[in-house]
Image (tube, rainbow, N blue to C red; front, side):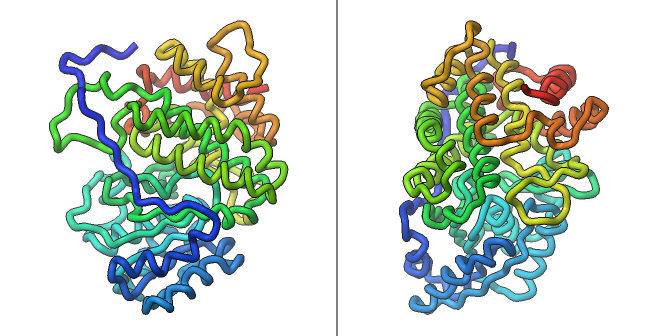
Length: 428
């Protein structure tokens, strides 16, 4: 177990964007941006979302407010350092821009965060990546207004200070984290998610689940050494405000996730999932995440030949939410003894009707496995192409995510990570 701090922290922080939620909310973005006095806006999206016409409609309605808006549809479906540099180069070549609007999943929103950072501040992408992959530089200047408009229900990127990407040469996933990356305004319009395929709903929805569970079971903020004001970071550990959002997200997921996968036209289920994604983002964006997300980075970054149903054809990929979920049951078995009451409470919220196993340590893994089977996720990392021979390389990638592992309620060694990854090859 983690050693007790000699001078325990007594302060937690909380941050969130302005939020506009509800069917039709995306039709008001022109008005919202006009309040910031902007005149030129770059709308950032990916080719699949652009094909729906949604970004073009959002750009078009800004004209009524004297705003010139241009759509860039080159965001990567799973961002890489190459795709982010391409987007930044485009924005620099066609700018200057007064503001950015991201329309799409977490990939488009994260791309817009990187573009905003690197068109307002000096330096290269690598300068800002989290250590040890990059230098972890903080932005020296303020960023422009960024409006995040999610079209998938999962990442919570509209609420957070994080941009996630694959570094291709290193075959590892990493990110950039700083409070200035948080969007200025999150516009969550459930109507925009109704064309989301079932496979995308399942994968993205598991990201919501893990955001809520990991932040709820994160190391408490009081278990850290007391920080000076300049040392405070967005991920400060579980705290009363983040807990509230996580609990509410799990309640919404329990009643609507399976329905949203089964029937994408169910407006009530779609609205619940959109709200759950935002709530979970407001939770983990302040408390943090831990082992499942740390494992997810190498699982996504080292993929060989897997391609998920419901995603655009192209390079092999393990979607982020899927990569997070595949080790979650084993991760929560590992962390159970650090906070038994939180794990059992989370299981009750996630699946109130579940037939409880005899061992309380199995409540949360059982709830997760039942959900994963029902929504059609692969049976562990073996289902996306990994074998026991891959575990050592995956462990290296996991242990590089110390910013995330520091949030775990108990220390994680290489042997611990190897055990979790090995037991996750086949879940049922």
